[in-house]
Structure formats: structure tokens, C-alpha cells
Length: 540
Image 1 (spheres, helix red, strand yellow):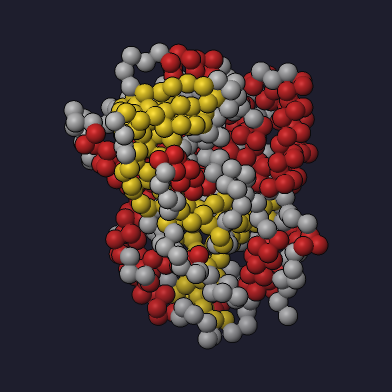
Image 2 (cartoon, rainbow, N blue to C red):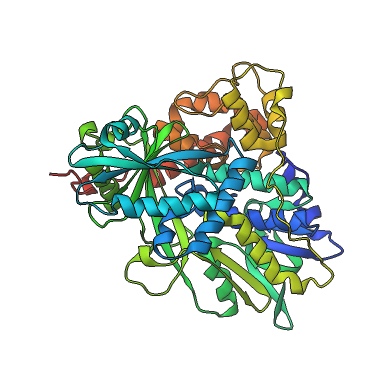
């Protein structure tokens, strides 16, 4: 289990991994999103014996449902948070260097219209500071004719010109898997579908936990010298085992995905929503156009999967109609939707968007809780968490030097002819395992799945080596086909089955059961809500 791979029989060893330890784990991390994965990697890299457990699937929560941007936080400059922006810009640059093909540059276009805010000079000042933090310079402002070559489908009325700048984007769920893979190469252990159901205390200090295997129902007692609660929007659930009050305000961010032929954007287009002035982004992602995001209070049960509401669909479609009136987009253009829940610290602000996005760390009775923050700075958040628990491991003398995040694979050794762009993508997504991914391909599996940037072989590899326990794991997180293909990819089910069923060792009834459950989930949480409930969003 502490190898660099999960095979289809990995859960057969749970008894040995969880029950037969003479010594306690140095750290048990609860939560399999990007924060927990980052802590696992940085702890294992510094020679600690560390275990990560996740009650659902890896990246099931916020870390597969973000806006998928690795950005420096340009808007935080307006709030005077220069240190936060600087750290984010530097981490963005490091991620693009260490994980190219998974974290890639994305150019943004922001139109400058007569009478609209922010104006050219204020935005340009922010971008100049942004550039300085990244150690680069670039031209940002373009006259109307030049700008329309970048974003030809935007509204022309009152357009004076526009600004262009660069940030980055990623596949958030694959980033989590890549970090977990790297952590395993340092000896760490990561197990999905294993829920923490009780924290055990000795002398009023957390020293272990009871966990339940969601697959078999079996319970285990785990001893730990330190426990880190990295469950994102769910952190209050574990904290309340201690009787402490909740601190998290869950906010929902929802998104639409449309085909690029209907919403053709080569640049990311950013705009201020006409209703409330909030930023909305439209950008190319994995072969489709991604639109987001909303920012509203999430009042439903956190144990249930979040879904976009009719009001949020209307809000995002209104933004598209405002910025791209000539495209005449409609609800039938939408391929899929998704919604994620962000953990922000509740300070009681009336406007959810005004709540801070900084991360927070609390140490309560030996349980360290870390939550909030940005996807971009997950490594800095991980190091901060480890520094907080260092005093609980007195013999541990870590080197806090920041090293390259990942080892890269030399894809030049691949014995196949594939485009260089695919080599770079595979290297970014799978690191030193990229060559092995390609080597397991059968006939035709190095081709792209139509309408996506995903190879068929990636399904085979995920089914064989990436702890897939349900069909939703495979189609919503190991690959993103459930977001990229209409009806969740239902038209391709026969080939999915031909590639994956034997790899997963599922018999016919099990496959049929998984297929039925996945389609029900997709229709409930990833399809468009009832159109009759979606208010008119067209700009008059």
C-alpha cells in the first residue's frame, strides 16, 4: 500500500496495513483533497510515517469541483493582501515548472468598455505588480481591433480595447492524484473510502481514531502521535467531536461546461457580472469551455453531493448573454454542470464573496485542523500545518527547504509515436509512470476520446492502478469524461466496459449496478436542472 501504485487488490491488505503496526503512525491525515494530499507528500518527503484516509473518494469534495485555476489572486491586490498574492504567484510559477502538462499557462482577456469598472489604468497597475511578483514583464493593453482578434465573439458595443495577462489552469482531481502518487513514492500510505468515525483521546489529547471501511463495513482502531483534520468544508464535523463550535461558512461555487464550437474561446475571457459585479471566467479546459463561478451560501447537508441550482444556471447564462450576445447561447448547449463547496472562515459578512480566502490552522486537544486557502498555495499550507505539529514530534528535525514538487518522467523513452503535446500532457498527469501508462495500451487506445483530450488508455490505467472502487471514481475524478461528454459519456459505455471491466474484476451484475448508480448520480448532480425552474436570463 505504500508503493507508488494502487492495484485492484490493494484493499485486500487493509487488515495488515491498519491493524499490525507495532508503533503509532507519526501523522494520520484525515481528508483526501489537495490540502490533505499536500500534507501527506511534504510529511513523507521529510521521513515521517504518515497515513491519509478519505471517507469518500480521493478529491471527492472541493478538490474535483474547483474552478480549476492556478492563479496568483489578482483581486487580492485590491484588498491590500500583497503577501498572499506574492506567495500565490510564486507557487503558480513553481507548479507550471514542476508539473507542466498538468498545470499550464492560460492567457486571460479582460475587455475595457466605456464607463465600466475596473478601468484601464487601475487594472494595468495591478498587472504591473503581478508581473513584478512573477519576475516578468509583458504588454497588457491592446486597442480595440487587436483585442477583438483575441476575443472575437465578445460584445463590441462601447468597447475601447482590452487587457491581456497570464495565469494557469489544471485538472484539479488529477493534481490530487499526482500529489498522492508522489507521496507514495516516499513511503506514504493513502486509502480512500475509509471514514474517521471517532477521535480517541488519552489525557485529553487526540492519540488515535476509529475508522470504518465504507466498502466492507469493518472497523479499525488506529494509533497516531498526531492527527490532522484536513477535510475542507467538513472540518467542523470532526472538531465537534470535541464539543467545539463550528467556524466554517460553506460557500457553493457552480459551473457550466459547453462545447467549444458553441462557445469558441482560445483565451480565457474574464468579465464582471452585470448583476452584482462579481468576476466570472470563461476558458478552454480539456476540450470544452468552462464557465464559472457562483459564490453563494450552501445550506444543504454536506454529506450529500452538491449540485447547481436553477438560479445559478440563470446567473451564469446571464453573464454569457451579456458578454457574448452574438453567439445566442441557450440551455441546450450545456454539456454538464458541477458544483463545489468552498470552506471559508465565517466572520458574519452579509455578502459571501466578502469572506476572506486565507487558510486557517487551529490546534485543539491535539487535533490540528487546517482549512481554507487556495488551490495554488496547497504546498505552503501543508508546510504551515507541519510546522504547527513539529513540537509534538520532538525527535523530528525536518529540513524546511522547498524542493521541486514532482519528479518528471523522460517521455523520450516511449516506444510509440504520439504528438509531443500528448507526451507533455502524460508526463504532467502521471510523472514517472507516464511511460508505463503508454505501455499498457492495447490497439487503438492511444487515440483521443472524441471531444476530449483524454486517451482511451487512461481509462485502462486508472482501472488497473488508481484505486477505482466505483464507476463514478473512474469517470468523474480519475478521468473527467463525466464532465466532458454529453449524458455523462453514456454513448461510450460499451467501450468503457470493454476496456475496464476485466481490469476492475467486476462481474456482470456489479458492472450493471455501477452503471445504474453512476447515471442516477450524474442526472441528479451533473445534469442541467429542470428547465422550467430556470428563470429568464436573456439580456433585453
